[in-house]
Image (tube, rainbow, N blue to C red; front, top):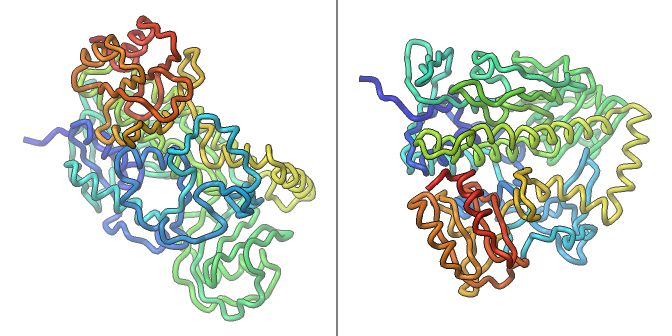
Length: 504
């Protein structure tokens, strides 16, 4: 008899693996199908594989006990990407369209709910390391990963999804496409993918250059595009050709050399090509993230330019949001329409990132209008408020969901409150349960939490800094669903608990 998995995930990249971990943590059976037999690739390793992790991603990994498994960020002493603003320093904290912002210009007092005990706002990691850590955790949790298998088709009914991979068939109750920008699940599932066409073709290449002295160091804007050499032989190039050169066909040494010569306006010679990939700034988003028992997450749901490194963080945010909701639905613990909130919450975040990407492209064009706008944005980013705003967007500090409610913290990630005994709230979240946080030792709140049994934990204690809060209801993804200052309304907390966790 064929095994029926609770969820089949297409794609064993970071998004698919993290989603698999979240589902398995909630005791769901998960099968991940990945078309690539060998997950290793030079393009996932330093330097092309380096990614900046934003505040929500760092918080998610920390809360699940995964952040301590990452080692690459500990090895970096890169002054161009600091882990947190340092008073009095003038190091580069990131960029917008290649325009740097500096941490000495960032006013962290504007970020009211980031405590001293908060995790860092940004870290550098490596795609290969992230995938390796997540894959090991997934296997430890019981996730089955099958590599070298591409989903070729699927058929869904009211009860489940039958997935085909060439001559093999797999059965699942749900299917999630985490299979990237060319998602087979999205295409076969009939999802509309709306957006804008590209302005440029981007190249990431590892090469040997016979006469590297002809190229300028760092980032170089030219009349035809941009090229960036992070270290000898590692090139990123943009050519504003409307994305014409981006295709599934292999890129040759001759092509890379021609592009580099055009963009750099030199006769530089490439003597060897070791690795290359192309990409564009095409910006598209699925008009719905769900069709029956089929869902999308990560690049399968939204694609955009990799400028600013927002794609990985956006996809991991999808996984964190979807995992507990899909698990509750599978286990018949979900309140009505809980799964619908995945699209409602994540689609606007995706749309913001796409616009953020489009805005960067608009001021990177070699046109005189774009250069003029670039200069104005540069001036704004050199101001304290401008740098603080850009950093907050790049690092995901402003990310929140519109969940209603009167308290300012509702819809935001829970601050990492530290208790008098040194414990922090994030350390209570490794099991993926909801939490009723009580700073007052209220017996009625303890009783309410106990009514949800294993689905909700009651955590009480005296914090070192409470931000005026007396109690909060925290979803499994770390988002505050309800919060109260000193005037506790038991009716409101009961209503919020029923909305997110169902009736007792």
